[in-house]
Image: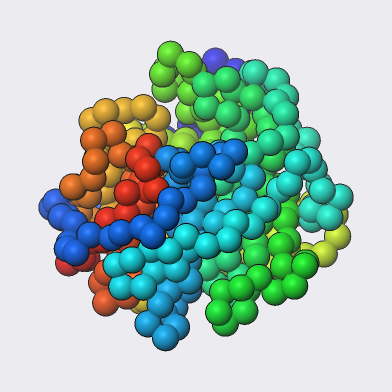
Length: 355
């Protein structure tokens, strides 16, 4: 084992910050009726039907409707939707990373590349999470090596935000801002930095590499919380907290301040699949398999947004189509949440009621 690997293992077994441990037993959460209907299909890569929905966030309701943004992880952008009751109407696409690196992206591209597959082409964002904090929607790339081929793709190391008006429409031609600085934060993060730009998982499904990748994001206005699917070890997963103002400060200087790391004891083999902000300010944490485990359920927890707050189990998600992977959660209010799934057409939206 290399010195870096040994250090990472020691940190995972004994992080400086004590991990939040869940207390109490989980129970099954069942989808509530009526089901959601789509007026048309969501757009996947190259205009094909979307089957890789990996994030959703919504604005507060306006005239009884909600303006939301969803991301399909093989696209270069995201898509607006409108929710009216239990009807979802897809809207316009918005491009976020284009066809190549932009000179306007804040910060500097990552200099570290430990992906064993070498450098891949700049193409999809690999968008894995969406958040909303007025007046912005945020969309985060995976910030990790590609799964299987272990390629470093600069397009996936981008955090984007879209400024919108009260109706959820992008504000002007410069509504989209992008930054590389979340990668700086990950490279400086205690405990998990040694796993940054390290292989995630090999083509044969071997979970050993355990490299870092983001799969969820939440923003409370001043703080951005990046939920990590991996690394995961001995039941522990991690949230990396960074300052929004520093991430999107003008210029190309790198981020120098180390972020806060919040460890969570969510169960062996589990990693974060999405995050959202609850009305009481706590984080809603959606978890699932950190790699390809088949015995790890998709579950919900509530966690305080600090290193020493209580972690409370909410329940296991049931009722999804066979093979569906819960990857996006939006808080609708009054203990209502909407969950969207990867590997099913149009995200297979299901509503659940929190206990």
